[in-house]
Picture 1: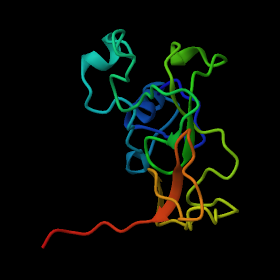
Picture 2: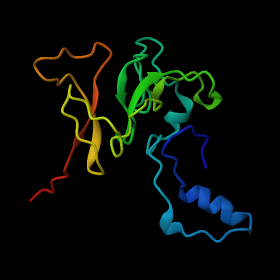
Picture 3: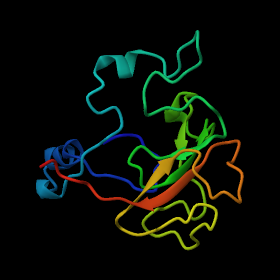
Picture 4: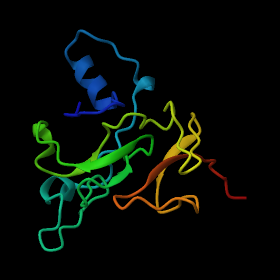
Length: 155
């Protein structure tokens, strides 16, 4: 179990084992979901600062360094803002892509943007960049958009 503020919460093997350890539950471990936050980052993820004190750049992909920049969530499902959520004590004053935007879910957002020709659906993910139609100007705080994607297997 982890402290989390998320629109897409996960139940991990650890959470299920903890519940089973109480003696009250017999969990189905096949329903566990992988945790991406800090995955395979080692002790440095816990011990190091989220931002490099000299460059003010993020030390890990889970964090961001340009406050108010539009980006994507770690799992690329949502559009997110780089923010320090002061009301959330577990963030330890670290900026991270916060999903609090209306219509930010690339699976189910209601209004696709004409600016990017976005495509929303179960095969869509969030992408960052400067790609916009020629009649528009890229957003100065970053661009995040939902597009369909396919994983292509190597031959």
